[in-house]
Image (cartoon, rainbow, N blue to C red; front, side, top):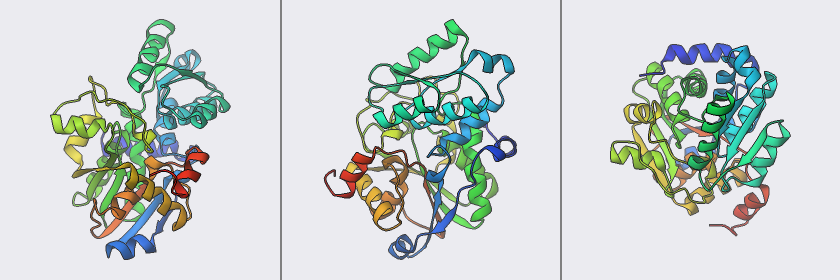
Length: 322
């Protein structure tokens, strides 16, 4: 395994002054529903509105002065780009974020507000990655990808350390699953400290690249389509080095959700938990509501992002979507 608990602990020491240690709260409604103790890890309250700040901060902090001077680049579905823009600005580094046309406009605008350049390239994250590769090859930028990178995975894994500190007897952890950086990092930390704990990856049933790859036994391409869980879009990369193998080794189960189920998760987060959570961040709640994930023992649900287009959020809450 390429990312170990020691790597994650080192990342935690490195980024501790630069991120929020987010709250863990009991959800009475989900606990009653599941006849278990269900807790929400409120990572959507992180500084840039998602967990992505952890990995981006850890990766940028380890660049050399020369690399920072040349700049950093990444493809993103939005939240990684926002986090990388924030981390780069803290280090005085230029950042270019390449995004597909499927990325919501509010996320594109926020990247620019944080001082990075947002470039819209193609119809998928894979097409946006082509521009990142050019920037690296021709202009000397450092590539900090959204998930398949040791430092990024270790940074995301600090969430797993916090979970184990806050809920040391956890029986189940529900984690959103896309390219696998979060799921791999969290699972690596949780399994190292509590091997019996079940870690379940949650994704949408429209273009779930990691689930398709796990089913195929190798990284595969999937069509990227619009979804309420837009932050979970994109491929895993046919040359995936780390996250595919780690997710295959460490995840106990993968659950897929319909758009209606994701919308129900967002509504529950807002109406019952009084939290604004984007679709990708609400999939753990949605999986419990739909009965697709089973709560065993003390169950932790990661709510991982709040960077939703507020008009879309209003329509979901009012039942106009799904």
